[in-house]
Length: 451
Image (cartoon, rainbow, N blue to C red; front, side, top):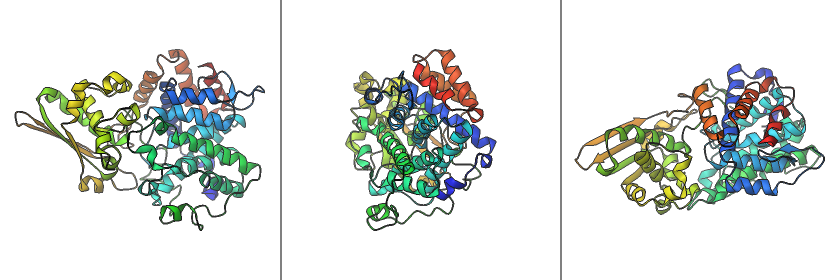
């Protein structure tokens, strides 16, 4: 991984990859602005210490700079809090953006360096998944975020190959996150866990840059990560190789609905089928998913009671019965769908009890591949006996069915309206759109302190 980062140059990136990098940054900033008042984000800003010298990194919504690790944590909390940011290659790779951006700002790096380091992070993130790295099955949370972010943070910091290897080791060794973050009644930590990983990655890169060494074999060594997880060492032979002709950032999906990624298809199907029925006429709704989706949001972890009875916003956006019931009842799934009054609506709760979720082995096979599909089917049985059926393979936002630039901008404005003036939102879009030509990424991050 360190060798790959050392070899990657801006000139290696296609124009499509550069554009995709900036599109994902736009999407992430929109998600952050939409979550600026979320409780975890507010806590992170309160705890971010001020730097009177004016050095350091910017936090969205704070008038002063702070340490880069605190900026990485706070900004990642905002990017991740709504569960609306990019996904599809083994987690949410945009959870790494704030770590790279914080160090880019402190070093006054130019846009070319930032885009290159960000792509190194995305490629490592995707390469781990392609290489068979699957910590979820061993009840370890999204540690690939810490690893990829450490690579990007080391690269933007100008570390050499050996220092980068130590940064990766120092990101992994002290911080192995538990999968309990995403099981049962989900807590506010769900939106903070990868923020901690981003913070650790920044610290690791700074430590390594000062000469601190980490264990030489954090993955395959005795007592290392792979021994802990009882898995094979990931095969990274394909690290950096195209995924069906796409770079890692191009192969990452962007969400249309603020819901877990495997819910994007079923929500779309529910909105399609509701045009042909009324909620009061529904006798049963049967949803089938691939294994990963069923396991994460459909009760496949033995947490059926939690999925059919979510009591927090964090639990609701990982409850497929809740999200589909909202789509059927309201004709949309939006941020307002998770308001407390909606969450405890009795009619919605009754509708949820009519919903079943199962894994379909055929959909699991269809989901497999370097660029996975996200298939799902839905069957609505009406009281009359009539049955409505629909299937989706690649929902809107999937790399094979991407949002247009206009649709992405509309999502950004919908999230930023009410937080900043439309003129400032447009300036952010313009700055991100030309970031690869910027002499200093602070042209963008300076805007964070005026929000």
